[in-house]
Amino acid sequence: MNANKNQAFSARLCFALRGLGHGLRAERSLRTQVVVSIGVAVALLILRPAPLWWALVIACSTAVVAAELFNTAIERLADHLHPQLHPEIRVVKDCAAAAVLCLSVGALGVAVALLVAIARS
Image 1 (cartoon, rainbow, N blue to C red):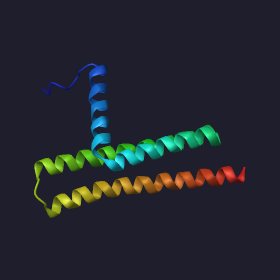
Image 2 (cartoon, one colour):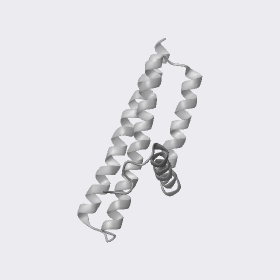
Image 3 (cartoon, rainbow, N blue to C red):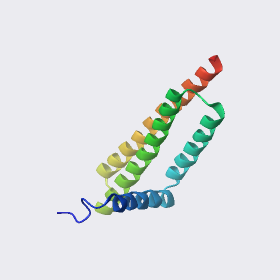
């Protein structure tokens, strides 16, 4: 059995925070997404939309950051397992990056819808 399984919540939280810290140190795109998410939070505080909009925007923002972390994990694992350039590894990495792009476009759509809703009220 894996020694990391069934550990205390505090230990598992430390693992997760360590992963987040690594991602922030290693990936410029993750840092960018976090900065954008902080900007979005500030915008929510200024605009004060209805609670449903808060939920939608926060869900989208955290999903984009999570996708960036998954992308980072996939890239690190792929590079570790197959350090040489390989067409199949490129496809895997491109698909992971495309997932981040799709979520980012969706989050942008929510932001536009929020701004339209605020403009109409």
